[in-house]
Amino acid sequence: MMFTSSTRPWLMPAVAWTVAFWLVLLWAWWRWGSAADALETARGEASIQQRQIDRLAELRQQGVAVTGARPDADLVARVHQSLAAAGVPPTACQGITPRSEPGGTGGVRRVSAQVQLRGLSPADLGGWLGSWQGQNPAWQVIGLDVARIVGQGNRFEATVLMAATSYE
Image (cartoon, rainbow, N blue to C red; front, side, top):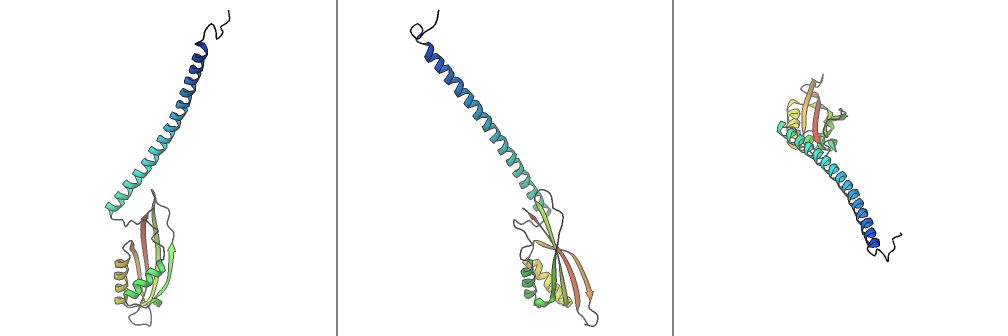
């Protein structure tokens, strides 16, 4: 005996509803998987951001100067501004040499530079160092080599090594 729509009128709508139910269920399962993946990605990004925030707070507690931008931008102009503020002619600056340092961890970047000054009196050097630290607190003087210039009395040449730490 064969089933026809006249003998079982409820069969076709029931099959249609069953198929529709399973299609909706499959679609929901697929969307749930996509949502779970998106949630896992968002949790991973939030975890990375939290670690970066914690690292930034740790660096601030350690007293490390932290800036958002690269601290070596326009270094020549800043050296000349601090020379002028100290009353030292800009010709005293004989050169600025950036030095590369290995990349830090967790977004921490350390930049250093060597500034060569010539023909300074001790007062000029002290005035420039004070002016530099006042105008550029992110840069720390980490090395200073001073030598008397032979035949020029109380004039010196100085090589100043400075570094700045930033968090990018």
